[in-house]
Image (cartoon, rainbow, N blue to C red; front, side, top):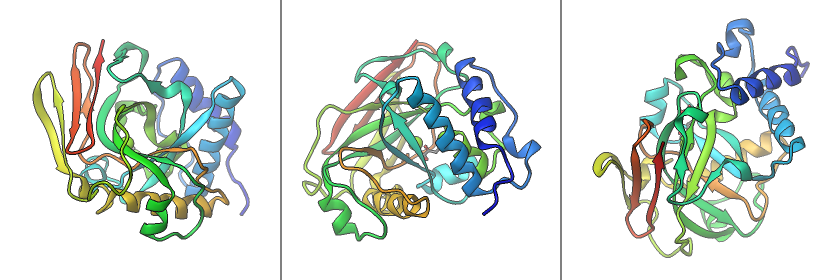
Length: 261
Ligand code: OOG
Ligand code: MG
């Protein structure tokens, strides 16, 4: 397909918005016909910029895998983004709201892959390729104005709004529990703020892995061994305010917490 946009230039635009903590208009304002494949090319160019500055790719995140999130963002299909080592916040660590644009936090389930997965795989093959499963939260921070009114290509180009993530420290064998029936509750300052059962994520968080492999295959890519994968949020995201103590409890998997400053 002929590329009608300059992926490198648009990646630079989003990258400087991120580094300068400044909102920009959605790319589709100026590039109405931006396609999903052009958007992934922009995302990839953005990740190359970060890798050139010394960041390491450590995994991927699925987004919009739950109905709650698709409704909140008014978008209708799952997308993926890339996670780097520098985006990781330590468990019980601090997220500085002022270092972002308008960060939000959301409850997730994560997997660590022991084997590479590629193309069309079954649920069992995906599960067999996992080393472990654990609780996690993602801190999103869209580079777009007001964190809203963007289209699927916009969000894909912006690395699916990814900013930071925090991983639970207790990792479990992937077949230890029925991953479709785990109660997830994210509390803010001690009060339950959002809860859902884990099957809110793709009907089964393992199916997020299956879908991720299919999306990667469309770009000629695989899910590498050793990757961390965030399966997508089970509920809508909470807008972070300085002082917030956020804790996610996932039945059987355990807890993960961060505070905002
Ligand atoms: C898009 C990213 C969604 C999830 O877990 O559903 C996402 C957004 O909400 O800006 O990461
Ligand atoms: Mg997410």
